[in-house]
Amino acid sequence: MNIVYILILIGIIILCGIIIIIIHNLKGTKVGIASMMKQPHQLPTWIDYHLKMGADKLYIFVDDPADPSIELIKDHSNKNNYRDNIRVTIIDDQWKKDNKCEYDSNKDEPQNWNVRQDRCVDRALNYARDDKIDIIIHIDSDELLYSRNKKKLNEIFNQHKSKDTFGISNYEMVPDKDNYTNCFLENKNFRMNGKNYIAYGNGKGAGRVGYAKSNGPHEIITISGKENKQEIKPEDLVVLHYVSCNLDETVKKYKMYGNFKNDQWEWAQQHLDARDIMKSCNEDCTDRAKKIFEKRMKKDDDEIIQIDINEILNG
Image (tube, rainbow, N blue to C red; front, side, top):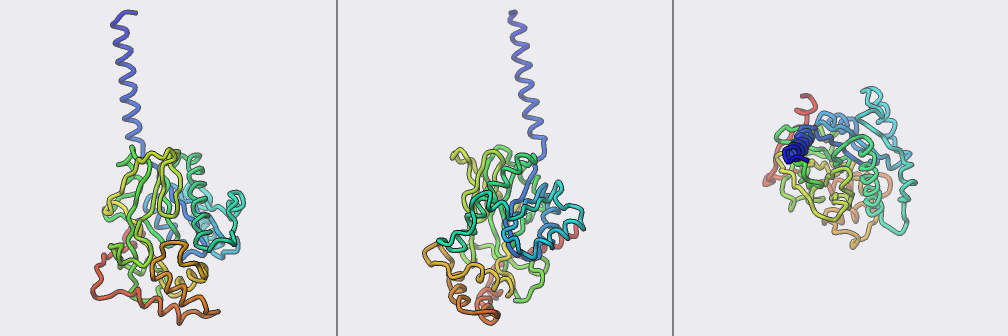
């Protein structure tokens, strides 16, 4: 073969490679969110907000078949024309039986909960492959994704196409009252220093479909074991954690957790105190919940940031 033809062939191959790279970079990144839910706080707001943030898919895993929120989800989704369509998928509790992660009486409920969360994220990563979703973010029903730079989710992850896993920092809600009706819409105060949080301070994870798997409630890792991680800049994206955001949510959370063991996890002192205060109350635990909540209220020396998610919902 003439050397000229060989050089032409090589040139064509190189050109094709360049074109493929350009097309890949121009292709928008599709982002999905996976969440396991049990009696969620103001779920319609959670759904509407994340669709406004540009989520291409919401995978909502129902943890309790008797949860009254199920009908709320269905009703709200039907009214807004996204029930089980391209953007919202609601998975009933059959997933627990399929994944053999029913309640284990030998484990505390928080540990059972985390096992089930792992299964949900991995299942969402599988669903996402069929749905042509590129990235899955795992958050809870009391968390919202927020961008100070006012970026949509696909815009954020478009910047990191060579990475397979991601870390997202979290801010924690600081209540200034104990009777919010809708914490997402009413509260605007957040702590940014994890040392002062009552819950976790190690953020949440996201992963690229086909390359990642769940590794507990706060991390998604590569399937290969080879680290290829990007920490997302907080100004681009953070998780807003509305932890036990009013008295009702506080009672509900610690009744669900029950009398968990001290040595099971590295519990924050707030959780241990709440467990001990709540464990012996019966029906009405409001007075005891008030004692827990008072420790969390906004203080004069708090270093906080003001965030109003209504700007995004109404934008």
